[in-house]
Length: 202
Ligand SMILES: NC(=O)c1ccc[n+]([C@@H]2O[C@H](COP(=O)([O-])OP(=O)(O)OC[C@H]3O[C@@H](n4cnc5c(N)ncnc54)[C@H](OP(=O)(O)O)[C@@H]3O)[C@@H](O)[C@H]2O)c1
Image (cartoon, rainbow, N blue to C red; front, side, top):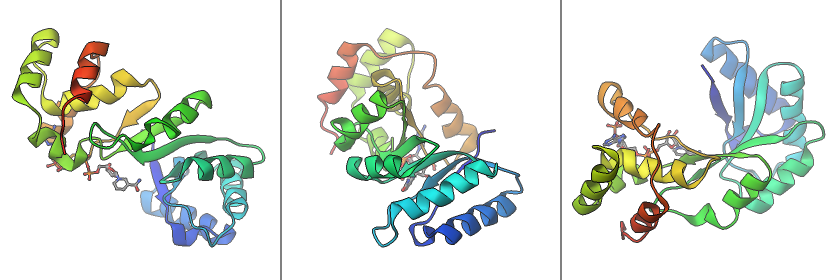
């Protein structure tokens, strides 16, 4: 198990971060959290204060790694510079075939600096599945064995980038969760990637 959770932006003062982490530990019934992420930045609290608390949590074994979510590239760099001993290991942002805004800044920066990008809304809230064209489904299934639209749009992320990891929501464990696991173990070709990028989903 690798447990990841987030601290809400109203809890980013030094004492509040530590209190929020301890309450999460109690609620989860665990001794430490693997990845503790700042859910959104809060301009009213200096990032140096928040990061001092995050380093306290790592140094005291309450969390293992520090992550961010919904930060701009500039804010990511500020957050990293505010850390004295530890490093940012991940940044969680919306990313999918329908929303490629982070491709020119955060994704290359993260690659260069060994930061994992956690892609949320990777299925475009399910729209990428309902709008997926039949001819693309058939073409990719011919080349790779039967694949579903969900598996293809998730595979587009992991085929394109080694450091970007989609987190699809699935509240239907026996079906959607199992289906989404079928994203692993195969890769789209560059040509297929380009083909998918040419489809208008919105
Ligand atoms: N960092 C942040 O600020 C932030 C903000 C919001 C959300 N998130 C994260 O983003 C993730 C997803 O958000 P989202 O639900 O809006 O978008 P999404 O993952 O793009 O889409 C989820 C939708 O797709 C459906 N689905 C999943 N697998 C499917 C499959 N194989 N076939 C057909 N439909 C499938 C789900 O249905 P079922 O539920 O019926 O399986 C659900 O309706 C969550 O993990 C959440 O924690 C992060």
